[in-house]
Picture 1 (tube, rainbow over the protein chains, first blue to last red):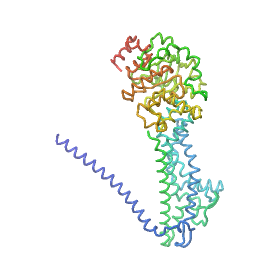
Picture 2 (cartoon, chains in turn purple, yellow):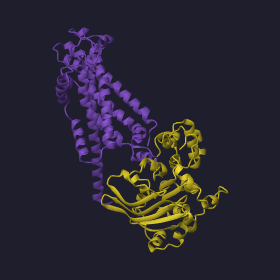
Picture 3 (cartoon, chains in turn cyan, purple):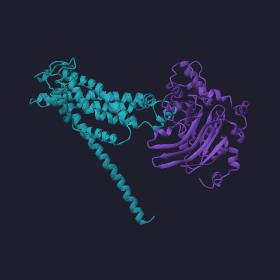
Picture 4 (cartoon, rainbow over the protein chains, first blue to last red):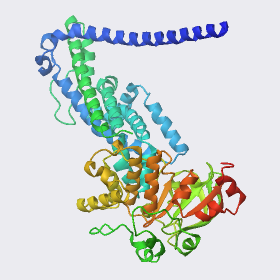
Length: 290
Length: 296
């Protein structure tokens, strides 16, 4: 082997190893940031976390402050947002993927949805304020909050569902059509079941995003201090991120620890959501393997 | 289809199927019979199931088929051969209008199925595809159980009764020579079957809609020799009740399974005739060059 070739080989070996190291460092810095964050939150808040904290209403005194109304508000918002955005989002995705002709109009709509997914959530908050709170006169109700959050997550749900639909091999559709199935039968019996795991994953990710949003809710005028658990769609509400934001903005040191405890609750809810996602994906994808 | 009796022939075929007596007599004897392709006289005597005349086909501006005229005799196997890209698969997909699904395709000419133009405006494409079944090159079972795969066609056609469905499933699997291998695991995922079994399942699934015609697009090209020969045996048996059109790259296969062979080249039908004649005594030099392996 010539000297040149040996040199070249050594150099490319070095490059390969260097690249692997750089990628590893990137991963480690991500992990470090995450560990640091969790450590901060846990060390501050774990002592304040108790059943009383979850059961109690908000209070001026850190020791008596609880997260009950915010937790209830967040769960209400999640439920309503799911009911509103999932059927619309899945419907839009199915139309775009399965029915829409591949023309300019579709390209324009598609580009706009992709852009909407990147619009800062505060913008949706302002839209919600104008459209739902003022124009539809829903006031600062939990329904107005859920509708606003639906605007935030709709583009994400549509894009994720489209992705899932596209992942179903065309051969499955062809087989179904060749057996004399109509378009509706093909979508309902073959395409949807096969794409459901992917869709569920996308939907749950979108819901996790909605759970953590404070900005659009603040924009429509949701307040932190709500001394009761919402019991109807027109009730005032607060949500976990708003409550946490409020606590951490207070001057008393103890409230910062209460906020940390609130963050732990928020994270726990998120973990539960993700666990459901993993479970659903596992259950539904067990039969579906290409 | 009546709900009480899952007959494997469709109503439109009932009157005509008695006419072709020649073919049925040939194979009533033993199960290990010699493979006999039909002679040109027998082919000429058979009723024409599909009749294609002056077919031009376009993808966008590109013409893929030029003035193809071909008769497919009933209850015979017609093989379409030719080099890659010669238009044989396109031709096959015209016969059940699967090409409709590709944007920007258009077609001129006439295709008659049982004397009816399948491209006239009021044709019900869904109904057509129940009468003209298709088996694809790559086996594509649904990610469901074996039972659900076979029962899907009858189900979308509106058959709900479990007992009827079970009967159709068993009948179709038997016809596709798969019943004995899967009868104890009908509720297992179809994707656990071997490649050859999956392809036979796809054939069974197609038979379950009781089509008169079976289109096969290189059904054995992804299979090992043993599975291939099982599929070929199957095709030979199915010829008793179905009109079969098969696309194949493999000329030995065409020679083994078919009664009639059509040779396509660059979108044109060069020559068609009884398989025995075409392979031993082709009229055109292009055909001879291809089947003797001089090009293609």
